[in-house]
Image (cartoon, rainbow, N blue to C red; front, side, top):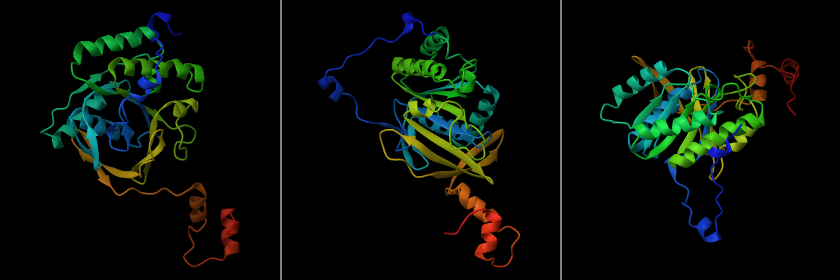
Length: 285
């Protein structure tokens, strides 16, 4: 339950104040707007954390480019609620190929509880004591680890957690990124696990897909701008972990296209439409 003592005050803007609000700015050009809440989701081992860590370290390094997109820099706080030791190795690998970088990157190695207003207040206090520069982004990895005991399928519980994220973002005037998993069959699902209100509530969302070693990032939501074109990457081993390397994106087939091609497996010669329809369960009309 939210504590009335920590609820943010209600703001009332005049039309002049509304018009004076900042125009849309980007952390990563056309992919991640600044001071917004984003969601990056995908199946286990799809590569979402590798992509998020790489993007976060680039932002924390003061800018530059990420997959050819202009980056606006700022401090990044990474809540490594799932595996802080893995984050350490991934950061070490990244720094081996970015030796000139000095990222303002901070880690919280604990599974903080966004469902608790007391934990949220503790997060704000702890970050204020350590981070002295302007924060651009706070990353929560993973969403399920920072909402323990919460019902992922419940709009009310997820609403409480999202309100906590909003409170943190408003306090630091920064954005947030939630790392989450797909639901249902992870190999076919293109939706985040749990209630649909999660995707509805964020400002932007990326889906990270892995298929036969080829990985891609796809825009599943962009509230205030067009969807960006998919980008591809692969994981390259570099001790003590891996780093990402851009590649051409691989377009996934639709379920029906996969079903159609699967029906042709084992046939070395052309097949008739009748045979194909029988094997695939589809129709060519």
